[in-house]
Length: 214
Image 1 (tube, rainbow, N blue to C red):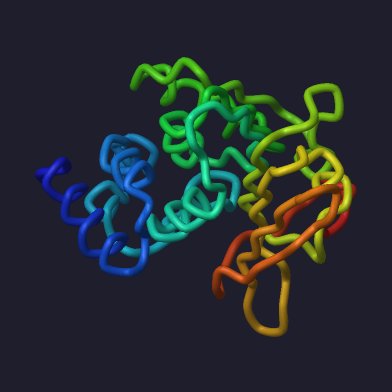
Image 2: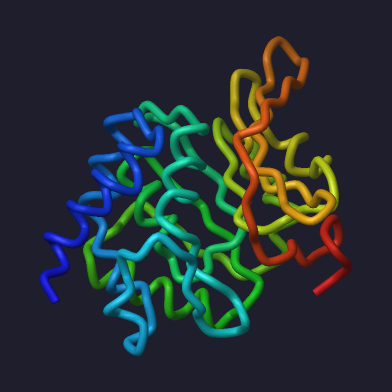
């Protein structure tokens, strides 16, 4: 399979034509080899418009969702980003091209180890993968200019919102009736504002401020 050609087609057909307008995001996704983050048995579907299974009952999100989250974070290149839910490491790889540094938390040690290996193999040096309860964030590193949460929360995550810098953006799927709602929160002058991005489907956020402790 010609992965570079499939990647270029995915950027045009799945992203640009579906409302992703941030050129930095389009370029970043066009640079990251998604097939490296997908289990070998699914690599022929690496650029399909769908989520794919990975280990530990988790998934790698569809490309449009990753792009929509990155676009909503409004990154300009100098931010430190907190990511909750490393998974395969694919989203972290995309974020690494959009920000100065990414700190990513994964509750499954096996996934964290695998993600570090793939990120290292493609030369990503500005992502730190940690093992822990992502719903608690990292208080000692806060505040963060941007926070991306790749798991559905039962409501607005208070602790993580508390670690968001003034002027910062947090993107999270919020559990709804029958579907999850991808939502962006912005902190402006100490006040929080929220906007709906659209419906989505994620695995649940597991942790103290998610759907129960791990």
